[in-house]
Amino acid sequence: MIDMKNVFNQIETNMNDLVDKQVCWSACATPEQMENARNGKLELYLGISKRVPPEWIKDISGKDVLCLAGAGGLQAPLLAVAGVNVTVIDISEKMLDKDRYMAYEYGLNISIEHGNMNDLSRFPDDSFDYVINPASLFYVPDVITVFKECYRVLRKGGSFILAAPNPIAYVCDFVNDDNGGYYKAVNRMPYISSEHPEQSDWVEFGHSMQDYIGGQIASGFVISGYLEHQCEDITDLPFMTKADKL
Ligand SMILES: C[S@@+](CC[C@H](N)C(=O)[O-])C[C@H]1O[C@@H](n2cnc3c(N)ncnc32)[C@H](O)[C@@H]1O
Image (cartoon, rainbow, N blue to C red; front, side, top):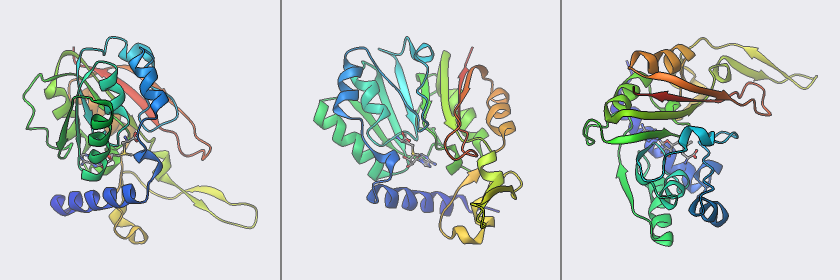
């Protein structure tokens, strides 16, 4: 049985450590990206190389948007400068500091909440028009709890956009050999890092597509958009979904 409190405390520590190490996904939006977003050319990336299709967010300006586990000074400031009313919630204060910095630098009004995406009880029902979730669900043991909360806080007609890894990234390990190495399918799903002693303090959960897609459907959503992107590491095949609350 996973001790949830310890899991999330450990994840917060891990996230803050990575920010100190300046991991790529903790980089703030560039001045050029901010200028483009201000001028109606918002380009939104959720931690994967393909951008959110513009038609998925074409009416987002002026709307109430929750950036879920989306700190780091990237998505929230870009949305805010594009005229969106943004709230960002994240478990890492150091990631949120980046949004505080961007809000100060650009004079933006961003509502900044330190918290766990597993528990959105601070937000009333029907609070948002969009929930935008950069790749991060592999830090929660149970995605369905998150999906149900997203459904609850969204208004009717609202959309939930998430990015996540395909499970093949967890099923396969790279095996080095004299011929340059190869991938081998070694892990059953779901993948739980604590079952792999070499992972030490790293906490991560590989969810099945049944959980990602079926879980959104079971939570009440209708999936209206899907795309994926194969990275240089061929088992790195992240995807994005757009799911609507009708
Ligand atoms: C890979 S980063 C994604 C954000 C980044 N802006 C990006 O573009 O990729 C993952 C984020 O999820 C946050 N996170 C992890 N577990 C969380 C949780 N249970 N609740 C809220 N935020 C969480 C981390 O602190 C981190 O900011």
